[in-house]
Every structure is written in structure tokens, then in C-alpha cells.
Image (tube, helix red, strand yellow):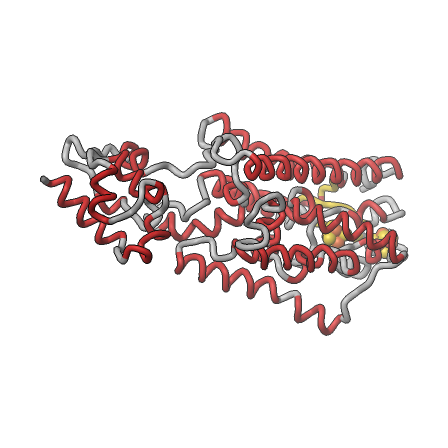
Length: 391
Ligand code: SF4
Ligand code: SF4
């Protein structure tokens, strides 16, 4: 079957549209997380953590075990995780190649590097092969560590979190290591395309695993292919396309660059089941529509909440209240602040300051952050609240 409408203009349009999507997402994310830093406390601008689909995975264990969201994650993180995974089921690591703003930054540096050095560098094959497994190690280590610690342990090392804090005083403290990883990843991408994606990204590792069940795949027609090798040269992930029948590499980020540079109509195409060929540009539209639809439906239905429910909201959602004697103190966790307990019960803030010695400001902080200073545990506070409610 002839590849539908493949002309130079079509290929350029495909590339342009992918870059427009990448650019819009990067600009929007940068604007939102920067506004969050510049206008703190307004509650209007969401922080980077609640906009990170990997945060959805990080908080999953805590949610499944009934401990609620870990600090800084929210329903929005889980919805974005669903969107990212749905994209992978449709077209492999298309989130990496079409949406991810950190990927876009690396792409920009990669393009600059090619202009600067007039060539594309490659890591020696033996080193590259082993180093690519690093991202799976990062995924497993941080997933297990996060689930045990019930907090975002990856955050201090996260280059995207560091990027989101470029205008924050936390950049050189809390985010200092992440800033180092960001600098290394971007400078690394000047020489070796998508340096962080290839070797370190845990989200990329997760999507690589899921890419095995993808509906869409890139297929090469060996009869039409002239073995010109342009597809191999164009691939920023160094996937060997020119000798593959179907691109099955977990490294492929579904950017369609190989398809877009192939000079022979029909030699390299994106195919759906039954080998139905699709224009590359359509795949960009489809995967973008998938995540936009998921976030859109969640937003319209009022579910795309980027703030965690408070203790009072959680209790109300479960039909529990102090007044009718059904309040469940097991809802009080280490991440709960004493101010939240005040809101959810009839105990006064002054009683907390008198009993536990905390300041009025510290009432607003999660108990896990002040417990060591005062030598109490959230369990102590929970038992005290139970007694106070029973009086
Ligand atoms: S194989 Fe093709 S679609 Fe996959 S990363 Fe390489 S150039 Fe992009
Ligand atoms: S660019 Fe097209 S024709 Fe050239 S090697 Fe790749 S698939 Fe074959």
C-alpha cells in the first residue's frame, strides 16, 4: 500500500507540528511553575510536583495502602500518570517524544550542539549498552525508596524540579543536586542527544517497559528500502532502524524523525494493527489528543484537582464527623498539620500550642516536619486528639 500523502512538505509539517506541541507544553509548564514561585500563597498556580505524571507513580503505593497522597502530589499527578501511560499504550514512548518538557529542553540543546559541532557524537557502543540500563535502576530504586519513605525522595535529584525552581531561593539548597543533574543533562545533550532520556530518566524506563504493548509501531518495508541509512542518522536515540523490520527498541521515543527523513515513500511507516499505515503527523495528533482528552474530561468533571484534600475534606467525603461521633482519628497522618486537625475537629489551635509547645506558624506545617524538634510523634497527637474528642 502506498504511504499516504508523503511529500517533503508533509514530512516538514509533521516535524513542525511535533515541535509546536513540544514548544507549547514547555512554555505553558514554564509559565505555570514560574508563576507558582513568583506568586506563592495565592493558591492560583500549581507547583511542579502536582504537574508531574511520575509523581502519580510515586504516590500510588501510599494511595493503594490507604495512606492518601504523599506530600506535594495530588489527583492531578495521578491523572497525568494515566494520560502518560495511555499514550504509551497507543504509541510507545510518545510522551517522551511529544510532550515531555525536559525532553524538549534536551532537544533544543541537541539541535544547538549539532549546529555548533557540525556533527553528532555517539557514546561507545559497549558503554552505551550498559549505561542505558541505569534508568531502570533509577526507576526501581526511587520507586521502592519513595514507597517506603512515603515522600518524594527523588525531588532533590530531579532536574525538572530544579528547572521549575530557577527563580526560587531553594534552587541552590533543596534543588542543588537536581540543578547539577539538569546542567549535566543539558550540556550532555549538546554532544549526545537526549542524554537524560537515554541514561537516567525513570519515567522513560517505565514507558519503555509499557512500549512493548503499543498499538502503533514503526515498520520498514525491506523491498522498498534502499538502505540509504538516513533513518539511522536521524535517530537521536541511536535506534538501528535501517536494518529492523519493526522498530521494537525500548529506546524509541516515537518522535517520527526516522519516518520524516526517509526519502522512499512507503519504506518506513507508522502502522496500526493489520498493517494499516498512518501518516506520521496523525500519530502526533492522536497521542496529543489522548492526553488532552484525559486531562480535559478530568477538568470538566472537576476531578483535576492539584491540591490535596484537607483532613476535613477527607472526613466529609467519607461521611465522618466529630459532631455525630464518627470521626476517625486514623485519618491523621504525619503529613497532616495541626491546623487541619483544628479545622476538622472542635479542638482549638491554642490547645495544640499549649499541649505540644509548637508556635502558631508551626500549626500550619505537616507534623512530620516539626515532630523531631518537639519530640512527639503523629501517633502521640492522634491519641491525644482521640481523648479530647471523647471528653
Ligand atoms: S526510531 Fe524513529 S521514532 Fe524512534 S526515536 Fe528513533 S527517530 Fe524517533
Ligand atoms: S531512510 Fe528509508 S530508505 Fe533509507 S534506510 Fe531508512 S527506511 Fe530504508
